[in-house]
Length: 387
Ligand code: CMC
Figure 1: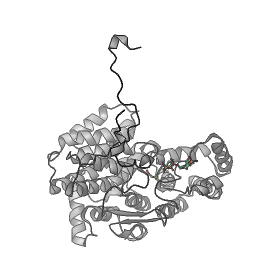
Figure 2: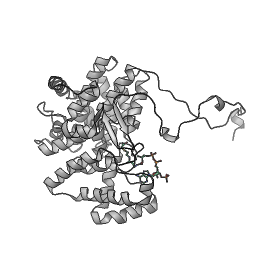
Figure 3: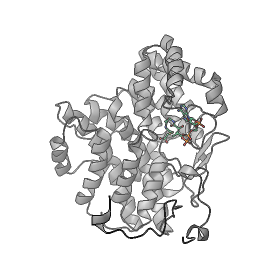
Figure 4: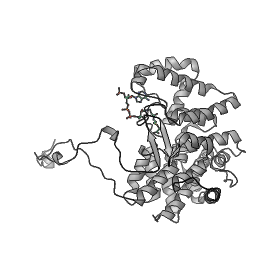
């Protein structure tokens, strides 16, 4: 038998846990201390003082914008929000019960056919395409949501920022300023998170010298899984199933006996509470205080407390991740539960595209190897003799 494996390095831990893949100057995560920075700026500080549009500028350009730079980016992004008419026609033809996440994945791919620069990988073209995709995927979601409910799509309003415009396109009503602010903060908080699975997928695709739309399509397909971007939907499904605060404890105990995972809890990198949880809680608290509808917030709080005290969760350092409070926040904003993963994508599109820029600026094909554990040197058996 040939000794092929002897020439290979030792395999990485399962799921590439703990592996550092390459340098990046986009975001910094300290999982033990619970720190997240975008381009050197602490996420909590950005959540307090900044906006999603400003953070998009920061992630794409590496520095916070001046007032003039921000205005220029706002004008550009607002002018490229509308969807090509052909895409709206396609959205009308899709089954109403299609998964919104799958609709967004397909739409990103189809948008490439209508983008005049889809095959141009120059930094300037990529930057323009990223700006178009930012506006377009928000329109895809708002339009599909309205179409599947039998309503006409609503055109964007250039006088509104990204979050407020989305609520406008979704509901066709003047967005409530507090709701728009809470959504803006949500988008800001999820905009990037170093080499998470979907970002890594985008970078792998970009590393083949493919194109931006292909990289973002890969990312969107990767975000769709419940261990990653669909966890936010699953977290809300679990809160709805719990129904009221008094049910949290029996629900938790029953889940432990069946080995069910608590969605919105646990993280590959954070071994403490996710630093994005606190600003999300802050916004959620403002919303529920204004509406008086505390039910989902109270359930989430109680579930977090119980998990924190539980030895199984404590021993494994399992704490609330970003999805845990994103779920009741989005629900309080009236966003349909099956579109929560698309809301995540509406934010993460900024990080994904920033990572594609970075990958393409200093590229080397990402091509790891496997640790082959199958047989070697098998004899050839003619087909009629196999069985
Ligand atoms: N509930 C119960 N047990 C859990 C959970 C959970 N949510 N998460 C991990 N564990 C246990 C797991 O069973 C394992 O136990 P043992 O050592 O006895 O086998 C241990 O903790 C380690 O789990 P793991 O699956 O090896 O850890 P991982 O780093 O591969 O997975 C994770 C991280 C996020 C996939 C996982 O914590 C999980 O499934 N959480 C629920 C889904 C979720 O909320 N995902 C969103 C992640 S954050 C945002 C994003 O990336 O989109």
